[in-house]
Image (cartoon, rainbow, N blue to C red; front, top):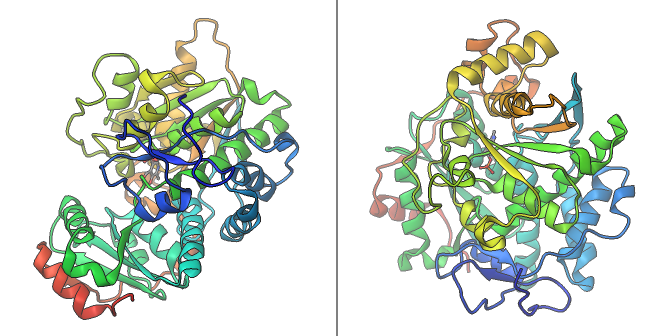
Length: 450
Ligand SMILES: Cc1ncc(COP(=O)(O)O)c(C=O)c1O
């Protein structure tokens, strides 16, 4: 990789994937901007190695220090690591399955999905930067259901920040609406009379609307580096746990990542670039199989098809944004370790949910099922039948997707006390899908940030 000059002390700088001059910005600037002004994604100019002794880490917080510390200058390191550790106050255990497989359960956070890890950490890092400058900001997030509640929960009550969540009226599940409209300090849920694309369009337009400048709008979507770095931590922690349980070297482990926008896979590849030795990754996609086809050399990265609706709907992404980041980090797909792609359709997803319950006694969400089925196929393709130890990322709790899970396993019903305890959805504000309507609502509802 081309090493650019560091912008701040010994901390790695970040550069835009679209800037041939590779002009460096600090992590803080990359975090606050989200997207680079030229429309590119920020990538590190150099990838630091994991802190010495990382293999000896005994718990997740020690791993968090070993993974995140090297990204910050010494004078900043302690505070940044401490805020990440404070944010990550829930466990990320592995659950062993037969045949040298394990699930890395990323769904023990407040909204029961892996996004809690990144949203909670990013909120604290962001607030840390704003407090230093005395500014306030308003985070605008468009959601098709899941991201919105993780961001709302992660940012709730955080000083100097407030959140507006735009979601498509009548197009999120009843459970998701109850999660989205839960009363939270500094969080506003707004239903848009349109689809998810309309929400995204409105959010993007609002970010560049000069009339809304006094609100200091910013975005917390999945391409923000503030979401990427925290996700590196659990790739390392998962492999350490599995290698200890099975008494195998980390370099034998295959990691299976249920993928859509490729943020999670990008974080895993970054872990490998930092020095996590692994046998390789399986990028497990649903019918939205652009990345597996790119890996097989069947299509160009830029020729992405339209999105297809599936039962693992949080992975319904036709054109994954983080592909640009992966290729920015590793030009021409020269990844630090092998990545293979699989594509699993809805019937096979339902079958994998049913099989995992029947054979392993575990209920999984449809996204995790795509990962388990992708692993089964990868293993079946090996001529020698050898089964490398495998870690499958369990990205959400099955109780978040009752409609799909009960189609495969009618009984028992997947439940979770946190979801059972949610109050009914609150009456919420609704706006027409027009920039003028959103602008009017924002200016009437929010105090200027100044
Ligand atoms: C439950 C679940 N699994 C998997 C994914 C895919 O992750 P990524 O978009 O980082 O590839 C998502 C993304 O939203 C998700 O919500």
